[in-house]
Image (cartoon, rainbow, N blue to C red; front, side, top):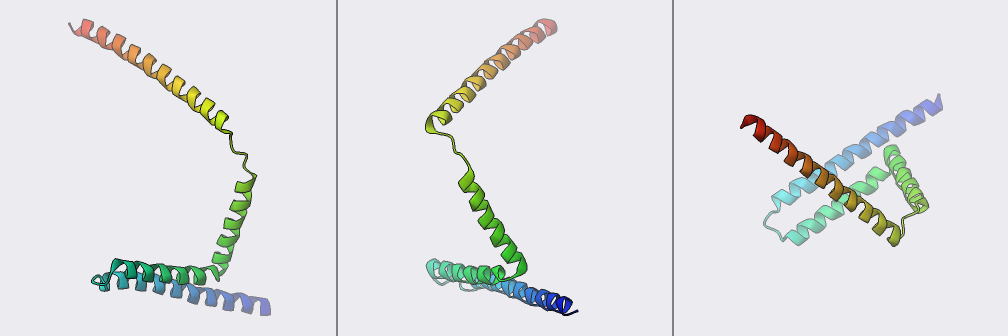
Length: 123
């Protein structure tokens, strides 16, 4: 029973944190418009500061922790990727370009022939 009480209190606390995140974002949007006469640099710094605080609060929720773990796992997977060498990239690009030119020539020839046939039929 205490586990269920912990989950409901954690869920309620997460809801409060999300309301705070929403409020911070809305304050950033409102403040950026309200203080339009203030230097854009100061407004941008204030928006960035509020975004950082909102992000920090969001990362304290269960969904935020799950998102952060997903981000970490994605970086681990990116380190495992074997990127092509410069030579492989150039060769593949050249093959694609040659294929595109060949297909373009084939389509041009087919269009030319069909245009000639339609012109001959129409008269």
